[in-house]
Amino acid sequence: MMSGSANVCNGSKPAIRGDAAGAVVARISLSYLSFMPAVELLTDVAIGVAIPSRNARGRIARLAGVVDSILASHQYPPVIEKLLAEALTLTALLGSLLKEPQGQLTLQAQTEGGAIDLMVCDYLGGELRGYVRHDAERIAALPDEPTLQQLFGKGYLAITFDQPVSDERYQGIVPLEGRNIGEAAQSYFSQSEQIPSLVRLAAEKRGEHWFAGGLLLQHLPEGEEGRERLHTRLDHPDWPHVAILGGSVKAEELTDPELPLDDLIWRLFHDEEEVRTLAAVKLGRGCRCDPDYVRSVIARFPAEEREAMVGDDGLIRVDCAFCSSSFSIEPKELSS
Ligand SMILES: [Zn+2]
Image 1: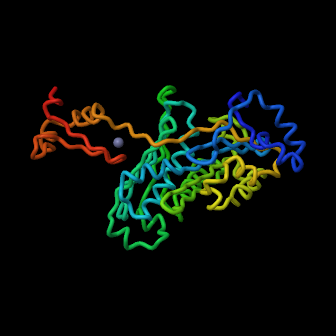
Image 2: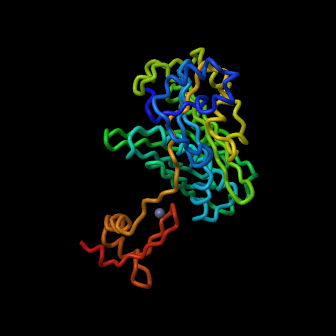
Image 3: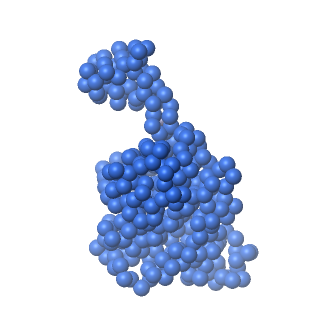
C-alpha cells in the first residue's frame, strides 16, 4: 500500500517528535521506500490520511489562493463566499479520493424556494471551480450564520463521482439539512452509505483573504473499496475513538495557513500506534470553458432557439457561470 510517493507524517520530523514517540518513528521509518521532496503542506493542497490500526482513512485539505481566485470572478456577499469556500473544500476532499486522474467529482445543489437556487462545484485533476446563483436581497436579509434551510429552502446536494476510464459513474443525493454542508455530507455517508464518517469544514476570511479547510475520515474495516459497504459496522469499537480525535479539530486549525497539514494530523492522532499521511495533491483553480467548447454547446440547441439568442450586434454572447469569461459567437460559425 505504501508507495514511493507516500509520506509519513511523523517520519519527516523525528528530531522534534522522536522522544515522545521514538518507537513509532523507528518502526514507521522502515516503511519509507524513497525520499519524497517536501511538498508545502500549508495551503491549496489535499493529503491522504491513514490510521491503519483503526481501519480509518481519509483526506485533509486546505484552500487559500484557489478560493480567492475563484471568488474574484464574482461579487458575492460574505455569506455566499463562506458557503462556496466550504463547498469547494468538500469538493477537494471528495475529488482527491478519485483514483483516476481523469476522474471528475461534481457537487450540485438543487433547491426549492431557497435564497440560493443553484450551486455547482467540480474537481478534475486537482483543479476546482464553482459558482452560486442566488437572490441578493434575500441573502442580505439572512442572519450572519444562516442554516442550510435558510439558504437553500428544501434543498438537495447531488454528489457525482465520474471515472471515465473504468466507466464508473456514481451519484449520491444528500438532503441539505443541518448547520453546514459538512454536516449534510457526514450524515449522508453515515446514514445512506452506512460508512461511519466524519466531515469537518471551516472557512474564514483573514484580512482580505479567504482560508478554508476540511477533514474527512471514514472507517473502512476491509480496506478495499467496493467491499466496504458489505462489511462496515456502524458500531465498530475502533470508530468512536477516531471520530472523537478527528472531531476535536478546531475551525481555526483547519484554516490556519501557517499550520502544516501533516502537523495538524499529528496533533490530532499522535496517541495512535501509527498514523500516516499519504501522497499530496496540489489544488488549483481551473475552468474548462473555451471558445470551441462554448460553440459546441450552443450548436446543440435547435436552430430557432439559437436565433433567439442573437443580440442586437448580431452575435450570441455567452458568459461562463464559473469564471465569468465572456464569449461572442458568430451564428454562422454554428451552421451545420
Ligand atoms: Zn469558465
